[in-house]
Image (cartoon, rainbow, N blue to C red; front, side):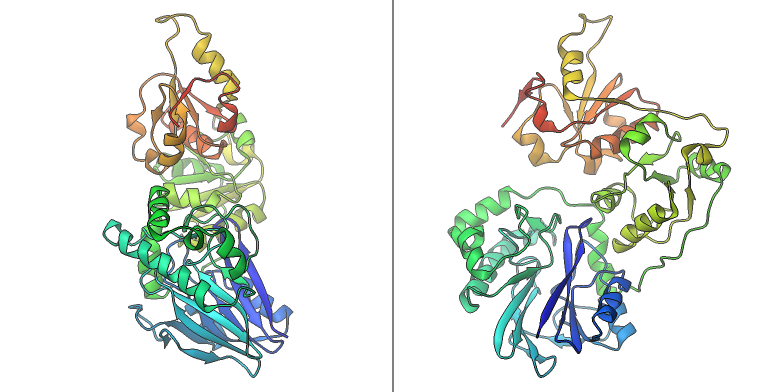
Length: 460
């Protein structure tokens, strides 16, 4: 019996897959921390004989080459990808036997990239599923703009044709197993929380299969927004063939060293809950709460090759953060500290950030005395462009989170109230501003509450 085992990476919105028949296994789109894959294979008593890539990834470093080398597996990669390592080259129409029970058939499905492949799994001669990478997702498709604006139109048209091909050539009963679409910024459109689907279901709900080509293209292109800055490094690194990560614990630093690193302008990341951070933190440290948004927003803000230190309450918290960062190519942290805040601070004074709700902001904007005794605060919106265009606070300043670390000097002087959609980006922004000694309040609230709280909105 053939079994498909997903390997979830919720922090990046992706899945890898281990497919086995009880004896041998194929792995599709493994991430860099391959110990998760080898452990799963060992738990099921199977030998990894093949590793396959659907495309050259833009949102994480692959573990494909490292996994193939570690297991002796055949590494399946499109022959058209200009990689700098040995692999078993694939082309459209190839059929790869995996065992007596399993084989995969290769379909060219360009759109997310020009050389994107999908893999049709055949078990005992019947279609048991299709692994669609960044092509056909759950209720969406992969975005076509990651190779530059000069290629976006051609890739968008190819994405439509690829979705149509999959729907035309595969049975309605075939399960769909995408790599992206679970929160990844590689997805164009929303998958609306779906955890499984089939070709038949996608024919009913997927815009690439329910809309005309022109309507699909118009909708797709209008919905594209900024993607994380670290994506620019992923393609070249994956073509070169990345090694596995160094997950050995970083060197422990005392309070004096952490302070020296902050004063030297290095990135020192506080992993605690943002409410705890707001109550007290080391001046100059930046709040990136460890969770499903952690790696994406660190990669969006911190230069890819910058030395960084991690502050966590436990060694496990630091180890989890280190693993998340390794998936997007960050090296081993230069230092770490664990324990309580006062352990990191030593005799250094602490800072804090005010927290508020949108109701507090409404009162501050509407109920204040007339200036000059109490001038209006600066309202800083750090959401993405499409979020801003849908609706925003009247009179707010818009600096997308993706641009903020390089545009802190553009934030007008005075008291700043910063908000985003749900509070995560706002606290990161508040910590960046606090490091510049700005008077800042972080709105720890969901933007959907702004109107009912009486905040004046416009747009949409």
